[in-house]
Structures are given as C-alpha cells and as structure tokens.
Amino acid sequence: MARLYVLLFLVQIVLAVCALISCLSADEEKVKALPRMIWVLIILFFPLVGSIAWFLVGRERPAGTAGVTGTARPAAPARRPLAPDDDPEFLASLDERSRREDQERLRLWEENLRRREEELRGRPDDRDRPEV
Image (cartoon, rainbow, N blue to C red; front, side, top):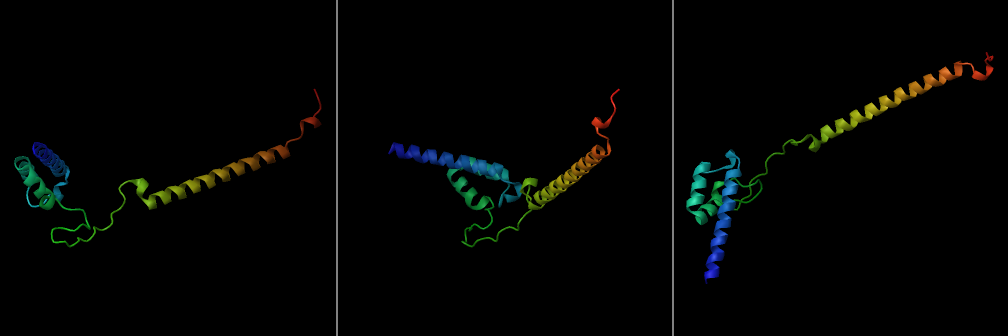
C-alpha cells in the first residue's frame, strides 16, 4: 500500500511540475481566467487540484481542439512563415535572382571569349614575322 502512495505522490509532483512549466512558459494572452502569478500560487499550494484546473481552465487550448463543451474551436487563420527559408515567395525570388545572375555571368563570359577570339584572328602569326 505504501508503494501506491509513493507512486501517487510522484505522479502529483510530476503533474505539478508540468503545470508550472506550462503556466510560466505560456504567452500572457493565452493565460485565461486569472493572472499568471495567481495560477502559479494555486498550482504550488494545491498541486493536484491546481494542476488539473490549470490544464482545464487556465490556458488556451491549441486551435481545433475540443474544449469542456466538446465543441471544436475554429482554426486560426494562416500566418505568414516566420523564417525566410519557410517563405515560398522568398525562395522563388532567390531562385530567380540566382538564375538572372547566372545568365549575366554566362553572357559576359561569352562576350569575353568572342573578344579574345577576334583578337587572335586579327593578330598575325608569329611564324610569319622575320627573325631579328
């Protein structure tokens, strides 16, 4: 019987620690019903009840999950990607810019090659020159 009490005590402590971490790391606008510090005190002084209350009432659930009434909330509108490497428009602009730079580099290289060929064609051969 003592092992069961120890196990339940450990579960209560783990639940309280998870609730504290969740409460302290939640955005201020996602904390509901009470201020954050009141939730922290409730979780600390009443670990089992406070932790359960935090997870059921105190925090805003992710969009699309069912609440206490069982009705699902509508999903939040799609947001723009946060990082540039997640933005398809930015990646497409990088690809287009790289393609333009490559084409310009190729055009300059071909011009340089034509100019060198014309210089070589216009120059007399070294074999035709008289030796000094």
